[in-house]
Amino acid sequence: MKRFYKDVTVVADDGGFAIRLDGRAVRTPARALLALPTPALADAVAQEWRAQGETVDPASMPMTGLANAAIDHVAPKPAVFADGIAHYAQTDLLCYRAEAPAPLVARQAAAWEPLLDWARARYDVTFAVTQGIIPVPQPPETLARLGAAVVACDPFMLVGLSTLVSLSGSLICGLAIVEGGHNIDRVWQAAEIDEAWQVELWGEDTLAAAASARRTADFSMAGAFCAMSRR
Image 1 (spheres, helix red, strand yellow):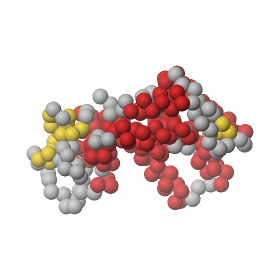
Image 2 (cartoon, rainbow, N blue to C red):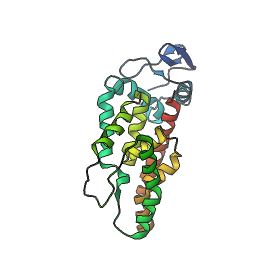
Image 3 (cartoon, one colour):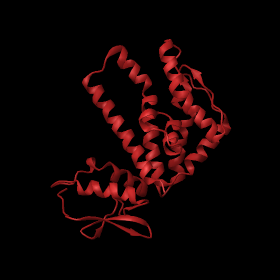
Image 4 (cartoon, rainbow, N blue to C red):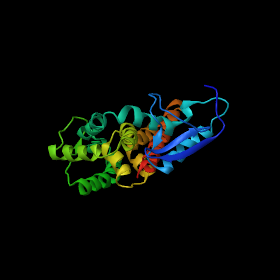
């Protein structure tokens, strides 16, 4: 789409902080007002619009895309969306450890146990931790309390949390960033321990490296989106 505007502004109104192009309000694909919950997120979205060249490329506007998804897809049915995210608690990455070799087992424990300890203290829950990939059931109280934590998130936090969880394979990793203020780079490194181990053993080809870089960027962007959405 050819760029049709010159000026991008942020205007506060009752629904949040709206983006205007040459004075006209931006709307989502479903024609809802693109209203952001915080000035920080509004400024980030506005900057994406300002950064466009002669054509508007939605692929270069990830914050805008997540905001559109929060308004059009999550806000109408937040409980349904939250349930899909909470489902990851049943098979959280951090609860499935390698049986061998010993160095990998040690790395997983060193990176993953602190995150589980945080969740144990934060939500007053316990976890079933196993070696191997055969599913083990988590305590019903754990699933209920983690599910409640997800449901408590607003649509903007939910859409960012969804990206964090789907990329890491861990609800705990996502909640640690959204609620716990953990360092996003360290959490991502913890989530990527198995992949990093394989690279150490066998090396990494160009395509795999590019895919890894995209996942890393997407994870970081989702974390930033959540941080800027926090009221």
